Length: 450
Image (cartoon, rainbow, N blue to C red):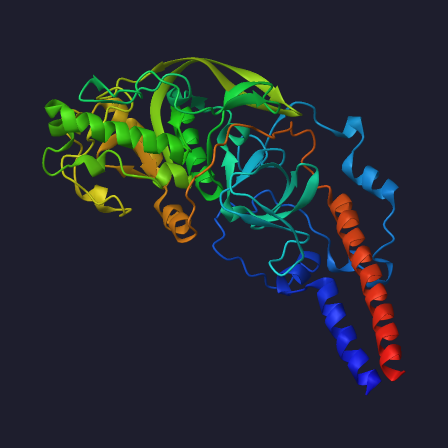
C-alpha cells in the first residue's frame, strides 16, 4: 500500500516538475504541430532558431557550459557586417524594442500556457523584448526574465519603424477644438506625459504603443508612403483612459453651453458620439492611430546598434480639410455615414466634398494596409480585427505609458543557449524540490507506520 501511495505522489510531482503541454514540448521539438491561437501573420517573422530534436538530450540536460553561451552569442568582428540595413520584417528588429503588457499578464518560465508562472505583470508594465518565437516574446522586466504571449502586448512603434514622423501634441499642447472653439482645460494643455529618452534611437522620442498585431499594418502603410516620397505623421497612438475621460467631459460641457459647438457635432446623420466616446475607446485598446501625411524634403541615415535606418529631418505636411483634432462635421471624410465597426462599409460611399488630395492619398496608404477609416475624423484609423480581440480581452488602457526600455539591436541572433541555460536551471531547481518532497514523503510514511 505504501509503495502504491508513493508511486501516485511521485507521478504527481513529476507532472508538476515539467508543467508540460504540447506547446512546451514543441519548443524543444519544433517539428511537431503547434497550436497558434490568434497569431498575427507577422508574429514569428524574425525566424528565430529553436533547438532541433538532436540538440536536446535529457540525460545531459543540465550540462551546458557557460563558455558555449558566450561563443554562440558573439561572432568574430570580421564576420559581422557593421552598419547594415536590417532585412527583417520592420526597419529595425523587434529584439531590443520596448513592449508593454496590455492587460494583467502571466510571465512564464517556458513558452507554454501550462508552464510555471514566474509572476503576473500588471497591465501597463513595460519591458525589453529579448527574443521572439511564434506568438511568444522572451522578455526582461526589472532583471527578471520569462515568456509572455505577445498578442496581449503593445509595442513601441518608433523602436521598429523609426522613419515615421511623430508629433503627439497631446503631450505638450493639445490641438483639440470643436467648430473652431477652444475646449476649456484641454486646448493648449498637456494632457499626459508620453516622451522619453530612447536608448535605442539615442534621442528624446515620443512613445507610440499599439497592439503588436497592428504594427505590421502601420509599417505597410509607411512603406507605401516612402515609396512615393511621403511619410506618415502619427499624432497619437495609445491615449490613457484618464486623459481621454477629461477630453470627453470637457467637450460635453462645452457643447452644453455653446450652440455652435453642439450643432457642429449634431448635424444629421452625425451626433456627438461620432466624435468622442467614453473610454475605453480604441486609443485605449491600442488599436487606433491619429495620423496625417507629409512630403519628405530631407532625410538622413542614422545608426541603431549595427543597423542603419532612415530618419526624416525636414518635411512639409499636406493640407488636410481641417486642423488635426477638430471635432465637428468639418472633419467628416465621407459623403455618407458608414458603420464604424465594418471593415468594408466605407467602400460603398464617396469622399466628402471638402476632402483634400492629401487626405485621399493618405487613406489609400492606410486602407491598402488593412486599416479602417472612421467616417467622422479624417485622421483616425482603426485595426478592427484587433479591436474585437482587445474588447474580448477587456483591454482598457487604465495606465500611463511614459517610459521606454529599449536597447540598441547590436546582435539579433537569439541567445538560445543562454535561454536554455536559464530554463534548465529552473528544471534543476524543481528536481531538487522534488527530491526534498520525496524525502519528506518518506519521513511522513515512516511516521505513519510507527
